[in-house]
Length: 330
Image (cartoon, rainbow, N blue to C red; front, side, top):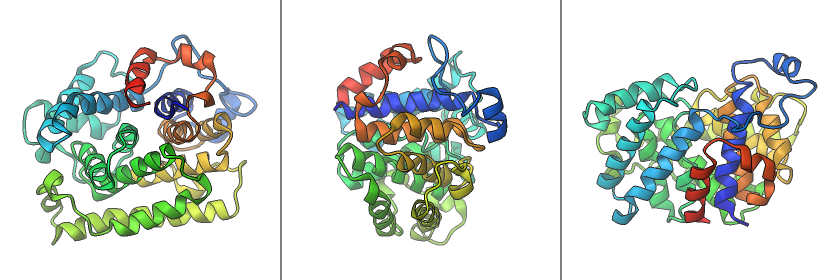
């Protein structure tokens, strides 16, 4: 099924569709792209945003650090290098988030990552890029630690960490053939099980920068926000409305837990129709490119590469990099 390829290309396709609708209301999107929003990625190559660029940066860092089994030292070096390379790239002109820009500029000075990260930011820039971690076939503890660690280099808020972990867990579940209908229930149980789990070996003293009494209290705040948005997701799925803006149910997606939930909602509204899912995700009033890229990642992880039209594959920006990385994990 080539699920890794399906996931990464799906992420890029969703990103490309949502790139032209971000910052627009649903009414404005439909006016500019009548009658129901953009249907295909435009251009050759079809351009993506910083969401796909940073996903590739994380993927490349994972590949570079593989020989050391992704220990914290080797992965920190690889992530820092790839994030700085992204920061300085002339192609970094796709309206990147201020948190990622600020944190990466600080990382470039060589200071410890715990000082570079933005401890008050739970923006979706941390979990829009985490999909590669879910493709690695890691045990749950290692996957959770790496998911949170890659987030922590830029977004030090506990909800950014938890939402990244939850996003990678959803990808891993779907890669393994998990049933979409019961996925929210499995994710809810997982989130409950992680409420007091702080990955000391990877996160170190990060929790102390938030002036919270214990590391367990620090991380539980992030998981509680994720549990709350999963409740909203379940409510939306109890009475699914495929015509309404998904942001009305689970949030606009500018913050991590809402991007995760709204992206997953769009997928679960159309679990067997991946094009309908990412088209729905692109016609949203919130952070449309991040929502749609997550939707595409979930859909591709579940359905594999056959989910996507060949014409889209041949035209998407960064096709060669996406292909090379996907082959390693398919």
